[in-house]
Image (cartoon, rainbow, N blue to C red):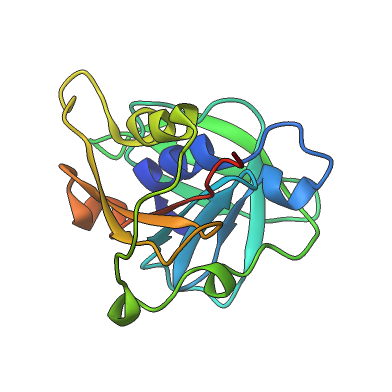
Length: 183
């Protein structure tokens, strides 16, 4: 399975780290989406992958910043990710695990894009979660990442953002969901 590494790096910023629910410590990959969540903030990107698998992967260590493409291989002796650079050269090899569990259903807390609407005043959001988008998509070359609210439907509801200032063809039209803080 071949995946754009920039999508894996972005999703890696949104996943939980050390949560007892092992399935949210990973990145969900299927034929339609690459998704990750920590329970408070989530991301969903178009995957453009030809696969019948619907898996949750957790990488051991950091995904290399200079990698462009990643090939995931699966075997009974171990799952290996091969990270390739811009010239198709092998940069690194990394182990990953497949997590058991049922990944949260994004359809449950996000409406269809045709149903997006903004209403009322926005809730208070944790600034730390707003910074996750910059860590996922920003760089020294691209410091101007904007988050545009596209859906909010009342108190205690999640706020859905699109990401502006990135190449959508690289990241697959990312949608970010942030749960409001309780006041």
